[in-house]
Length: 184
Image (cartoon, rainbow, N blue to C red):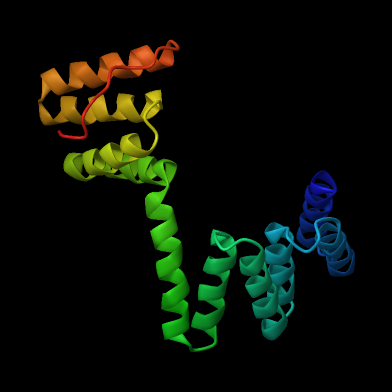
């Protein structure tokens, strides 16, 4: 049932992108019915389709159903924020935007991406903060440790750069890396 829900959702997205709204709605409904109405991506995509065709109330209902199915559906939350912005309801938009930000900021891969962005513009301390958080949440990601070693190298702290580079190499080769505190 879950595989069918994914399949119909994916076909629905293809139909939506090609401009075939009627077929897309049918596919999203099949995805929803195959998952006992608990497959949030289909609800979110159905909301997007409704929104694109000017049915804001239907879109809102679909996004809210997506959140009933999965309280952590960031796309549904983000889409609700955008919808409420367009409807002139900034307080509701901010409420959903803050929820999205909270969820994203707890995600180690999102924090890694933020660290990469900070690194690219030479904001070493910001990058280090994001990476230390990411590593506390996901200790065995070699790429987190590698970027952290490069941050310390850019700051001129060769001792920490070598330590984190060693951990990155150990993790990349299948080791567990040495336990490292979250201090700089």
